[in-house]
Structure formats: structure tokens, C-alpha cells
Image 1: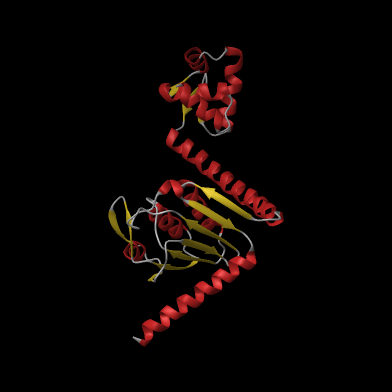
Image 2: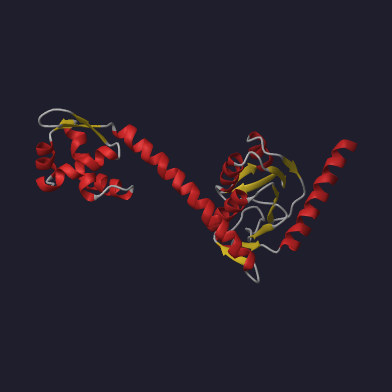
Length: 259
């Protein structure tokens, strides 16, 4: 019960309101006196508490002497509150992202090093989320779980123009991974290319991330603890890399047509 009360407090109820609602979910229908006794809310407070719950549409009041208080279904009530919370979170994300991107544009040397596979993948996903029109990638290797994270991020951004040039295979945990097949099955535009052991993600020709890692002696597997990402927001640099990417993409397309 305590966990439920704390959760309800977290979405805007007072302690007494949360206690009263949780109590009424077990009673279903009860008088103020019954709710007060079971919830241990003082009689002097219970009527105001129940009035507030009614105004917030958590309960219904049935006329009579005494009044009868009927609980509304937690599915109905909490689903409604969840939707409200999601809208508030989305609005906050939009507002803070605008503040964040404005702040980023004022940074004098917008280059950062990112260490660790999980942080690198998270940053790639964040760049995809921020992209306005296009994302281009060169994939020479993949970390464990990275393809799934990228595919999930791309599927959420169906309006983006996505181009990927990739090595046909890589190895993860001693297993051969067909990079081309994984992305093609997700309906993401990918073409086979001769890509060295490096990964580049470019967004809107404005920001980019290089990812490097050391490999095992047989040059098959990445050594995750050596991974480093270089996140770069110099637009001139990103634009230059994007132009080189598009030239390579056009060349591959021309070669296929000639064949």
C-alpha cells in the first residue's frame, strides 16, 4: 500500500488523498466514516480530502444520508493520469531540448569524447532523435545490441531520410552478423560497401559522431572496453563528411547501374 500511496503522491495527490483513494479501491463503496477509520485519516480532514478526490475525478459521490463515496476504476483513473504525465514530459523534452541545443551552439569547441559502449550507443540514438531531415551512416562494425538500438530509433523517425553504407558482416561474441540483412529486414536503406573498422554517423550535415575501437588479434571482434566516440558539432566538418558520404553513395549506385 505504501508504494501505491507514494506513486499517487508523485502524480499530484496529497498524502491523505492518496491514502483515501487506495483505501477506497479495497472498499469500493463506503461512507466518509468508514474511509476515515480504515485509512486512519482524521475525521476532521476526511470530508475535504474526499471532496478533492471528487474534483480530481478519482471518485464519485452518491447522494444520501450519509453520502456514499464510490471509487473509480484504477485503470480509468491512472490511464488518464499517465496520458497527462506523458504530455507534460513530451512538452518538457521539447522545451529543454531547445534550451540544450541553443546552449550547444554557443560552445566554443563543440567536440566531446565519449567512453564506453553503452554511452556511445545512447549518444547515437540521441543524435537520431534530434535529426530534422537526414541521417547518413558508415558502419564498419557493430557493438552488441547496437543494431537493435539503431533500428528501433530509425523506426521511430519514419520521416527521416536514412542512408547506410556498411560492411557486409561483422562478428559479435564469436558469431557472424549479417549487417546488411539486419537493416534490410527492418526496411532501412542500406548498401554494401568496403568500410574500414570505423563507424560514422552524420545528422543533417550539422553534427556527427566517429566511433573507434581496438580489435582482437584476428581482426574479427571488437574489444568493447577500448571503444571511444568522438562527437563533433562543427558544421563545416560534418558537412564535409556528409558530402564525401553522398559521393561514395552515388558512386556505388552508378557501379550497380553499369553492371
